[in-house]
Image (cartoon, rainbow, N blue to C red; front, side, top):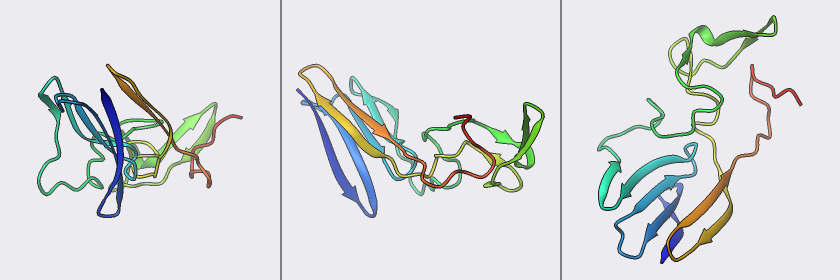
Length: 134
């Protein structure tokens, strides 16, 4: 049977997904853009937390929406209009807009041979330089 647990670690909300024998295990931090902290599949380590790791530097394993990588000076144009994103790394915008946002659990499903968790983020204050066309 697969299980989903929600817990607090320091000031962070964590979701753990695992099978009964703990050979498959995932740990996701909801406060850091749903960053995958640990991922083991069939007892093989795929992602693991590094000692003295600061998520705020590389934003590793977080959702990089709507862009991954760097946008030089945080500026881009779309349909002939110029936009300015917040610059969050030196003079550039890097790794999207939700890497440090708090997500919430929308739904959970535990089954005998799998489990799923649906996470969501709702933008309350529009991001500088990025607006959806609807």
